[in-house]
Image (cartoon, rainbow, N blue to C red; front, side, top):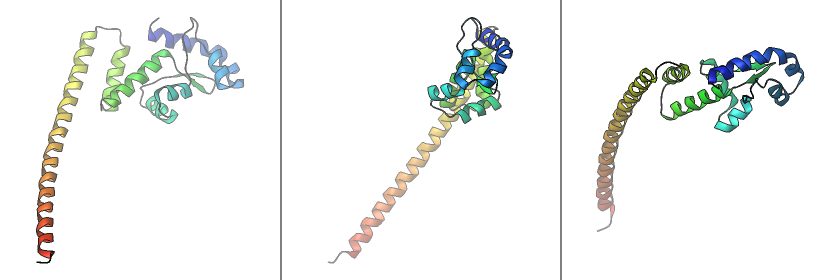
Length: 168
């Protein structure tokens, strides 16, 4: 089953269970909101624990348009598609990509068009990020060389000062 059909099935099944979900706890609401076809739904707490992030971070990603959970009453319910988008978002963050870049790439994941443009766009983002990191590495190497020079000069001055202070 495609990620989009998971999301649409979850959305179709939610209105029938909204009243029950308001009266039930989060776990019962999640079970009641289970989409037809047995697609797995996740709570915000489950995703936060699985990916070792806070629920607040997940809500932030929602605000940025990276995730679009359905609702079961007052509770958010996440499909496998949402879980995958969160996983891709976190992977992009580890690569050091900006949230706008991540959103662009994650949105490409959802399209069912030819993957060639997606791969080319991803390669361009990676190349740009590589250039940026290489520049940072060059800057760090220059800074480390300057620090080494200052340390060498300080050691020499300390040795000279200690040599003069020592009794003859």
